[in-house]
Length: 212
Image (cartoon, rainbow, N blue to C red; front, side, top):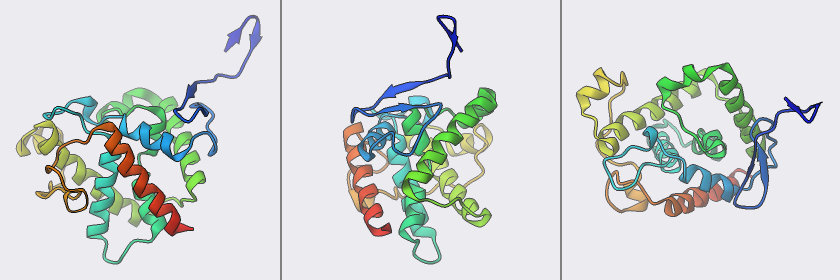
């Protein structure tokens, strides 16, 4: 990158609500605080921002749902760090402020994949997380894809047949909202951003305290 005759390293700065600044191209684990992350995830929407409800579904609410599914399905209680890893599995999207549809990601190229991996690495370093084993990753992906299949029906408005035939999601959706027992409200209704951020931040703080 050239500027006024000089070659300079590429930068992609964002100013966060805390006042900290994050270079998306060269992130470090110290460039955001927990509230920045919670707000970023609560203001980043799944499904391209489309919804059959008045509000779209945030990545923060999705992350809590995946965690709830993993807790329900785990053959033994998950450790606080394992639960923290589930909660933060999409944290890079909150820092980037972008959750592309899965089928679009290959078209964004290797550079985009490298960018998201650098953000993910910074998240894992900050919160002391270990990479999934193959078995752990498969368990996580099941919860993530079941959440996606369920959101497609109950949040976006796809039919069950369309989820299988059009979206090609080969996982059975669940009937009951996994967040309802904890938070109440209306099943499957997307939360307002401030509420999603508050609930995500509370769970993040709780798990961090347990993991130390």
